[in-house]
Amino acid sequence: VQLQASGGGLVQAGGSLKLSCSGFESSLTLKAVAWYRQLPGTQRTQIAGINTSGYINYADSVKGRFIISGDDAKGTVTLEMNDLKPEDTGVYYCNLYIPKRGAYWGQGTLVTVSS
Image 1 (tube, one colour):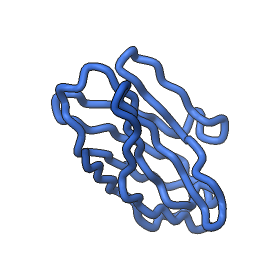
Image 2 (image 1 turned 90 degrees about the vertical axis):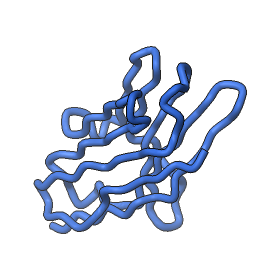
Image 3 (image 1 turned 135 degrees about the vertical axis):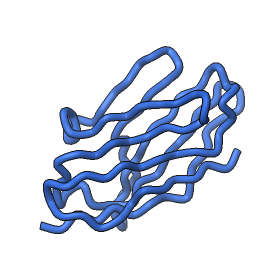
């Protein structure tokens, strides 16, 4: 599995970005995908997650602003980020968890929100 994260960039506060995670087999019937954010010198923090049971969760800091969704046919998971704030700045990673196989990470995409 080689995950690819894309869609990061520079945006002003209040703007929007859409991140995409691709590269996993669309035929996987049991999996979970999550987006993490990391700042220099800190651990990665989960921002949003979705699994094939339909369970979705968000960090409190992004509830009401971010939307995670998946397209099994395309093998992609998207994170729509709205009303961005400077504190949303960081490198965003997607993570794929497959039971009995383990977890996989994408290469990260940088999001910078200017005030």
